[in-house]
Amino acid sequence: MRVMVAAILAMTASGAVANELEDAHRLALQGRDSYWNDYLSMQFPDTEAGAHMTTANKAIELAQKDIVTAFVRHRAPK
Image (cartoon, rainbow, N blue to C red; front, side, top):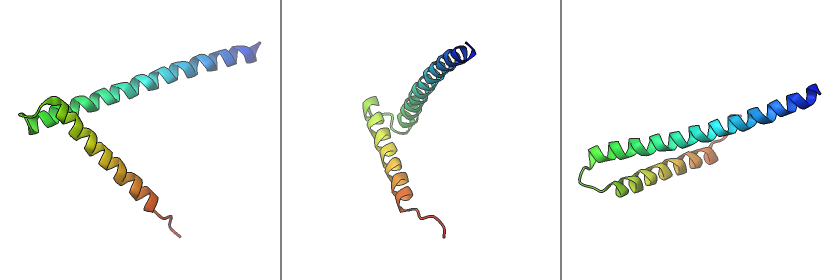
């Protein structure tokens, strides 16, 4: 009986953690988008908002590409 109660608690807790992680990820993306819109709107006030997100997404894509390239080229010390 204890094992069943522990299993039920573990399944409930893992579901709650998954929901919290999903919410945190969603909020992080929302914050990132808000930051880039506010920052790029200040830098380029005459440009429409949709163009700001395109610019931000391109910058993020290039940064990710640089990180992956550096990781692939990294060699462990001998």
